[in-house]
Length: 243
Image 1: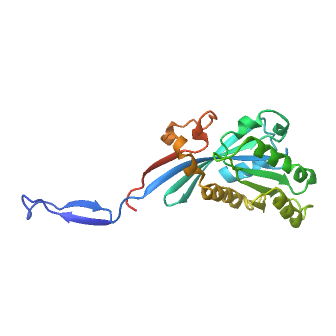
Image 2: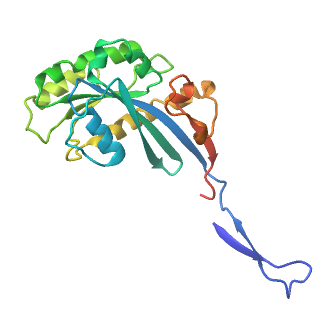
Image 3: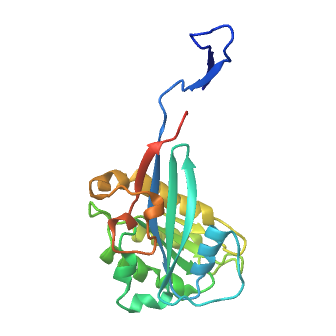
């Protein structure tokens, strides 16, 4: 950025200096995106605690059962030119047995499947959630949405599930990554979510859906609506200003 000075051509000796700002390069184009992430798993594995830790930076030891689904928002300044708004949909553990998951999954672009490292049955049932997601939601090109596995509650125990078992499980079900996490101690929560964001961006899902997106100002969005394609992505591009 360069600040230059010019005098009035009518009276160059007496008029005050007129200042103007010149950008040394064209303004950058900034993008604002909306991604919908699913947080799923059996009841009591810590899904709500993970969401609260990630979006609010706090942990509550009080357990509150989720009815149906709930969602929270998280804003990320991903880089100089990209702002990402995440919708985190916390799906109740019992919903896998019902008929509403297809509605809750609509427009999702990634998912975290959570299990409790101290409860083997929650790990054994994780594949049910993986299958449910892959049967009911996909990216616009038909490919499966990225999934990360979160081995939660590492603060309670060293874990009864060995890491090589989890790694083998991820290979079997084509899960790209897994993380040992603790909502209480804030272990690997940010890292797991960042992994999903990176996967979505790398798959160029935004570019694949540009033709079907209506450009809209962020303040015009009803974030709770699931009836609009805007809930998959918002693409709002505008100049960032002098770069």
